[in-house]
Length: 166
Image (cartoon, rainbow, N blue to C red):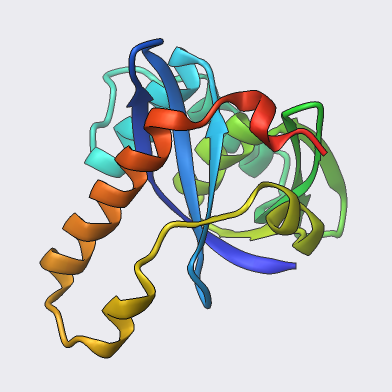
């Protein structure tokens, strides 16, 4: 398992399909995962620090797990089959609960906990969008982020979900 982080939620144009972008912490591969609008909102809310007046479904799940005396310790993206990403919530007693990747990510950001991705998933769906020449240059964090965003937008212009089928 390789630790990843949620870069953010983006909207793919022209289809207006939301996706969440993950990036491996120790490398340059990114994983775009197409998700539904409610899950995209749930992830974006947490990242923007928006707290709704009443708990959303993912907040409720985290509260129920805590009320049952358990804790979610990590989230794992364990497989991709026919462009569908499969995940697991791992509880503090070792119990694993199957989940859609988008829901698992929304929960992980709320706990918060580490997110891991199976190496075979990164190999199948990971895309390297970093500029290899950027390693030789000394650039600020903002400039690097802008370059990554530009490269990702260029990548999205031509990618289709079918491109990630094995």
